[in-house]
Image 1: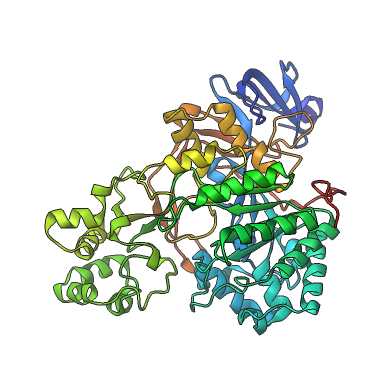
Image 2: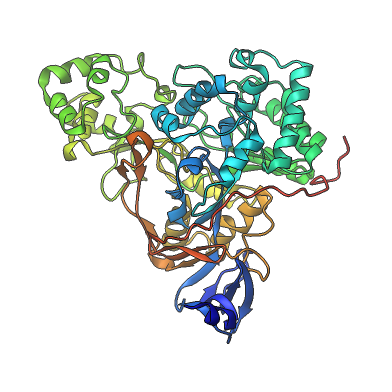
Length: 585
């Protein structure tokens, strides 16, 4: 279209005759939407002309989805497409969760942060060493590096506590020494500067599951309350941002640790979100956490759990980064062989005998290996079975077949030319149903998330949680209405992150939009692809039902295929000039 015709058109884009689900939870209605200069310009019956028009008859038109728990800190530097999230209707992500990231960072500490990210989030070190150009030391310089890249979706960055602690304390942080008054003063100042540069808050980890590949616990594990408070006060000084935390809730007990969060929120006036899951060894503990969060809300304290719509499941396979035998000496000796050669070696009786006789845990670098056993492992299958029964476990099937569970697992891994996966639901599956996930989602205080897009690239593929929420809980089970499902994916997550310019289809707000074939939304089987820097592999899948995804008024995906448009960019936090509630310091 030539320049003259662009000038005489009223809008850049009109979406006609769609069923509008605006993100607020309000009942859907049929209407048109017009977009101009990246914003929603009109909603209703629109008779004007546009440069481009989409007929959305019999389709659902929603805001773009906002995902507040991802780890694209590295990928947003080296890649223009933030898959898998961007193919699941997500148009904005918050990254830098769990206390890990790459800024601030002194040159001599780069390897430390890479090792931590490799261990905690399963992003291979060679990928990061090749993909990161390290054109930064401070968090503000990292923000500037992010601004240089054009992306398919928008990104928001959190200040990671581990990086901040190492930057201020050096080796003392790695050794888990207590931060002194000078350390905390520096952290508060740097947190304020980070938020003023654009950070949406800070994240921290207090779980023993988060280790470097060397087996070192994350530097933030034992950070005291006054250190966390100091950083939160940096957010307060800047007048913006929230705190994200993952914890084992053991220090010294859940109630005491939760009271720490409440005191931090009271003093700083900043909100808190925390990861909430059901562990096999503590199947009812999540209920206490969610109850405490609801009580905190009644006190005016914005503390919200982030929950999953299905169990977080490990995909263990020869083509991934982990399998039940990864820690054995014999498997390690052949682990770098191409998959066909490795399969041939593993079929040899002497190799099989050695691997099955060796301890898979002693030499493992996988921090979660002690939390799963063969009674919690299942053949994944095609189509994937995310809801297996107890009698389908590898342990149960092995007993029926008169062989050891390890031997059956070994056989499954070799099937399909070594491309099979073993599924191991890590959390939210103690009772072998999706009942816990349903109860969590029914709590309006809970935030839908924890898909970890950009992380765990070799053994978890949960970035498609938005698609699962739609296809399983709304379309198949009809537990949540279309309007409520979209609210949970849009305005609810946007509000939790402090994003006031998106998440709702409203005149004047950002034109981030999904056009959806609701009844046909779904995902393909997971598969491995080799498209990371340094030839790194990651889990990926295809999607269906997303007719178009629009970011800032530009179509980025149509029916799962990427366009050439890259309107996504770094989003900076905005000072709100007030505390989120009326407590005084």
